[in-house]
Image 1 (cartoon, one colour):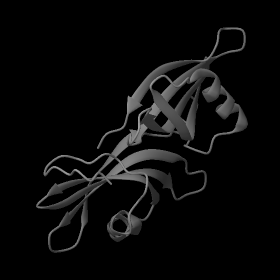
Image 2: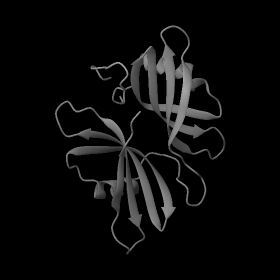
Image 3: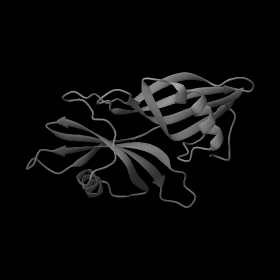
Length: 182
């Protein structure tokens, strides 16, 4: 976690979920039914209590349920029970033609496309998972752990979008890079 907390500001996302944060998550999002939420990273905000922003995989608990990427916001009062204040979609999967597939571990082909396109230039991107979308070619949305190449840099979640055209229509290329913030 960020050691220089300023009241009212969000910390950077931390990819290590502390026992305290996990307990807050388990008391709230961990009890929801219909969707399984799995935290990937957490950021906090000191207010009159603590706000948590959990970056999560969200998978529908039904046959063929796909995995979306969401932010689950939880408020832990100074005294009392924590509660969810919002769930915001980051990337939504749709198991329909033209929709995003669910997020999943990278296949060898998806890893090869990423490695062939993303070249570190001041920021190192480590892909964690990917979603794909069939178009006239293929769109990929890679959830990455990004780090500025500098001593002591803090990693942060980022979406790297890559378009891979149909064979013979050009080379895969980055279409956008979007940092995820609480």
